[in-house]
Amino acid sequence: MPSINDLEIYAQENHVPIMMKTGIEFILELIRNQAYTRILELGTAIGYSAIRMAKLSTLIQIDTLENDPERAQLAIANIAAERLDTQIHVFAMDIAKFQTDRLYDLIFVDAAKAQYPRYMEQFRGNLAKGGVFVFDNLNFHGMVEDPSLTENKGTRQMIKKLRRFRETLMHDPDCLTQFYPEVGDGVAVVGLLRK
Ligand SMILES: C[S@@+](CC[C@H](N)C(=O)[O-])C[C@H]1O[C@@H](n2cnc3c(N)ncnc32)[C@H](O)[C@@H]1O
Image (tube, rainbow, N blue to C red; front, side, top):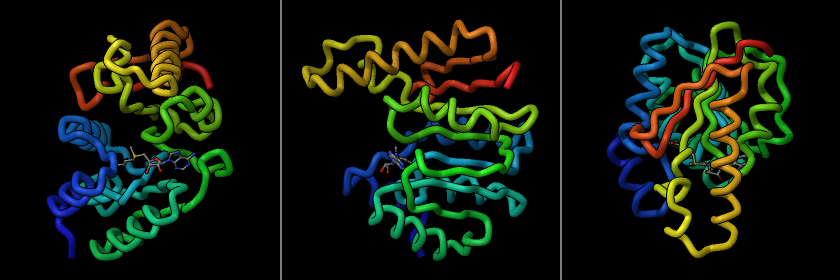
């Protein structure tokens, strides 16, 4: 059975992006403090964050979405090896095609960064009363603050979108946003005042 440490090593060796330590610890603390049990995760990768969240309590149920078939298969195997398959349900599909009328306490957004505004629109109706969205990578490795850190055109476009999204979150009167730039790769917790 792979340990959490094994998953971290696998991710590092195979360049699979998973949550940074401070980021995952922050989310685990949030789930514990708020007693959240219904979780939707956008971006499973190999199941690392889903496994860590599910291990907090047997009451926790997670739906998690991944469109890379190899990663999704690996996540399913890792989750089964941890005997968490009754708690974590992997949907190997594109987020854009996922539809549900379920309500979630936590919608953890950790997939394509440029799509964050679209994801928020898509799932705002699935947020339970008192629930929150959590977005990771809002710093994008310091590049949102300092775009000169990359010369890549595509990355620059994406960074621009992330900056615009961050500003929208901070100024939208319908959102209650707390931004934690020092946590993980820049994490925001967003509640909705109106849905
Ligand atoms: C940062 S990783 C997720 C890491 C994971 N949450 C963790 O910390 O262990 C983002 C994942 O989102 C997936 N992804 C990106 N766009 C997607 C889409 N449109 N639909 C489903 N999955 C997507 C990528 O393939 C990638 O594995």
